[in-house]
Length: 180
Image (cartoon, rainbow, N blue to C red; front, side, top):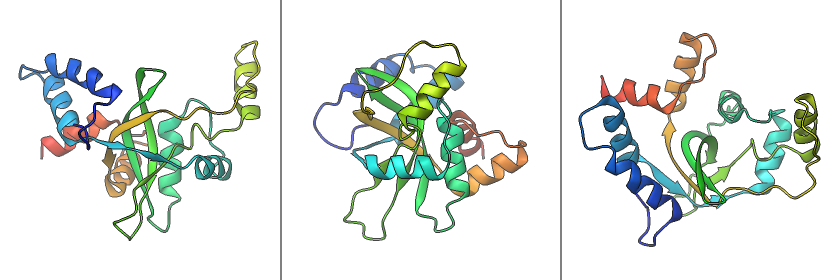
């Protein structure tokens, strides 16, 4: 599960998932597949996240769509679409992000969290449209940990085309991979 020997805060969450994954149900098979194939991503590039969020006109609370849009516009094939969990303030939440890879295998993969790169002004506009009475003024906080699995670009593109624009979930990908 973990790429290194030190204990990570999401490891406890994943250990709990394992305890509920001992039968042969589809949910247990999925959780075991996810835990055995997922990996941690450690390096977040906040400035690139902000730049790409602005360039792609990303929307608040739309991480899956934002990342799919970035992948579809990635003509240099430098990004990967990742789905999994992020840990923020001790709570694991489902999330999607992209990872930039380099030809030089010595360089780490860089997390680009374009949904969290959205400006405070755009976040405030989103809140006001929904009747929220607050103004976001603090700096963005990027998650402490990312753990997920890549959905390959060719799979992502075929799925979106076949399903009239619907973004696949990690479970959709698991179902495709495990039932071939």
